[in-house]
Length: 221
Image (cartoon, rainbow, N blue to C red; front, side):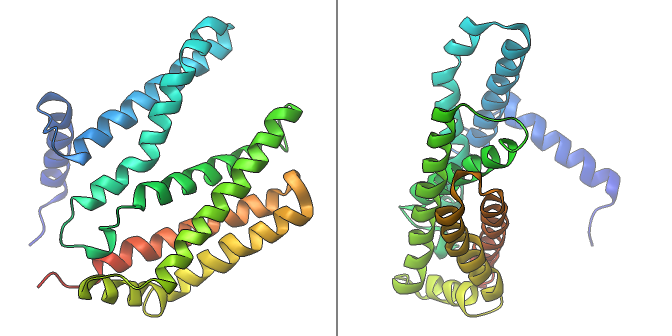
């Protein structure tokens, strides 16, 4: 029987509080919580610096913000890696794959915002390259799951569910409509390709749904 709402809320709040008061540093769940909290603090300070015109503070936060942003994107790879029963997630290249996803997703957000708040020409060029390169690397990683079968039986079963089975629609949607098509549109329409950015983000959501759910679809026993 499931616990009642009050019990669930109490336990969840207590566990969340203990992450910061009694952290288990070997857990990537705890490390991730501190990374995200630190990144959120840097973003808040950058926003404040922008409002108050504190350019010195903003400059000082650039490097810490860049480091924390990368860690916030890729730490999930090691969190997944601690789930030893989920063989599909035991991929040593997963941090690089997540980095490519974060690169093009962040650039896609800038491409959308740029429609309303124009960026300087140099920044626009940098965003365009980040979107194209990140999306291309993500596509190559996604294709590798199709052409390079996993090593273990459980990983093969999960990959089959992701590509051809229950979650195949999400995988192929993410691959074709969310990666191939946006790359073609971006090459044709240029850096103002908001539609390509929206397709890329929607495709990433579909792909990640397939990847996360398929890994958990294989029984542990």
